[in-house]
Length: 227
Image (cartoon, rainbow, N blue to C red):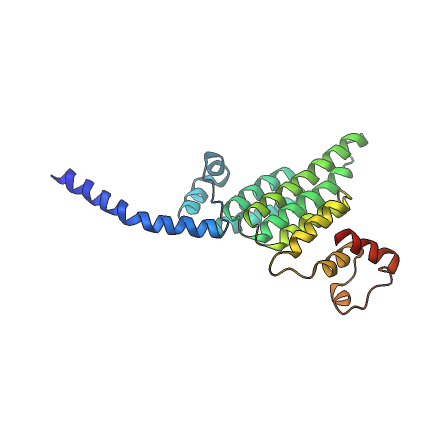
């Protein structure tokens, strides 16, 4: 008899949870939230206490703690450790722009420069290979960040900057500047692009007091590239 009562209670709770879970799933879909993968690899890296905390709804606290560790890894130029930490940070908090952007910056800018200047590697070809691998890691963070946040312009703009400064691919850069500009909250495309492209203060451009570096020879061909 007791078993039947327990089963009835469990079934009743299950029916009560269904509409709540459906509403939560719809909210996640609207917010482009891809969820957190709580697998054994994450548990191994976080440790038992951190993993339990993440399961208990304290993902933000765990992610912030890992972010501090990542900062220490950066100070010690521990690029591999920092990469793993940022992968877990962005898994725990996929809707925080700062984490994706910072991870990409460390990989594509800091780690790539360190790889290129590595005095322990005498072969230039291997240094260039390592540098390109860090470019790719930075790009991967930004692309995955965009997949989790397709409605935010920040990461599109960061990816455009990476294509421009690291890959020297101005066509791809202009493509992602355009995508950023199409989203709510983005600054006007041409102002933002020219400001980044020529290193001009965006407020000067907004007031139409263009830098002498943005003369007619460079300004209008670039505008034509976008439009």
